[in-house]
Image (cartoon, rainbow, N blue to C red; front, side, top):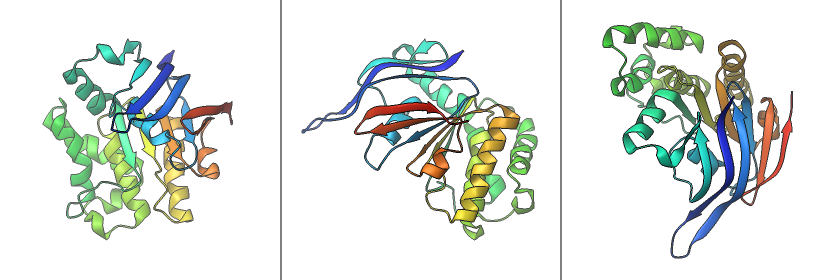
Length: 227
């Protein structure tokens, strides 16, 4: 079953001047797929990710998530989908630098319906999953870049989302740390069954996915299976 269905989707940022950044996109993504969205800087790939992640409204076209059209969601439902069904990992980590790994990972739970009695187990479970149990009480500003990004992945996982969005997750990392982060995402896909949507401009990173959408100048140039 398709988790995302996109038909003739466009995105324009209204000015002046008006700037159209996505043009007539059509594709679908199934539950459990690992898809990379690749393209040069300014191609519209991050804008597309933000639309798929309910962070931006499409200008027109059809966008369905889990069978329901985006335009049919109330603001309250959009907030629920983002918090409960989606997890986000960004290039800049977006962690609170003076708080510990444990405290950072706990943040999404404070805006969820998960009983507080379940928080500790949830947090420890995802911290262990990304291999950071030994760093749980460390202030995140003291961690390496790779450890901070794995903390961000744990935070994205703590509400047990259906989808993980990763926007240039290795962009600020050295090669070794980037490999560890990508191995973590591949593990989440293969062993845990998460749907993962990865945005990158790096060919080697994009090819970690099962399938690649290549975007240039706001249009899909190719859509191909990798593995």
